[in-house]
Image (cartoon, rainbow, N blue to C red):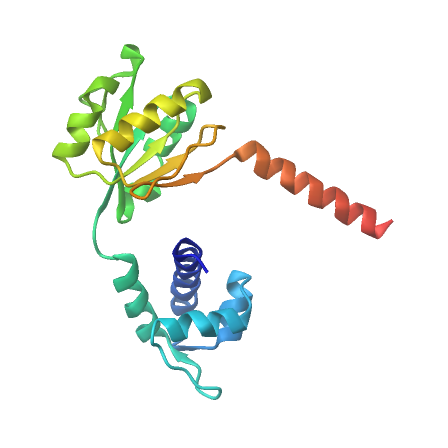
Length: 208
């Protein structure tokens, strides 16, 4: 089991627990979490045991204890600053996404090669790309989003790594190599949609 997979599951558990707590629940069972996240109840129990959270068959798990453990693990309560590289349609959509600004994740700046998109006075300023390394180091930025054309992604990737970025969310349709000091999550929207069509067609075939 990789640490990346484990943390991915913990994030799913955390989201499910927050929703269940909003319904007024104080206790929860592994079956409830499994149903809400699509993760097997046996795996939920293993992960909770790894967090050193004890439950029992009759009483389940204490919601507040689970959330407290996860908040510590995930660094909840700390502002998470992010920069966006590439301020076209995807980049602007991310910059304008209101939920980021209301939560702990804060997009604090964008960077662009197109000088016509530079806007230093915007609520979330957009700077020239050449200013990005100095900004990242000065503001201790650890995570960046790549939303540039595919043919520019590798160059931006190198710039971000050299500037000290430790995590990248990549929207470009190219493979970017992870290193010991930089984790990369790639989102290929077209591939995800193609995947959906495959399974939708497969379901239709099963019904015929």
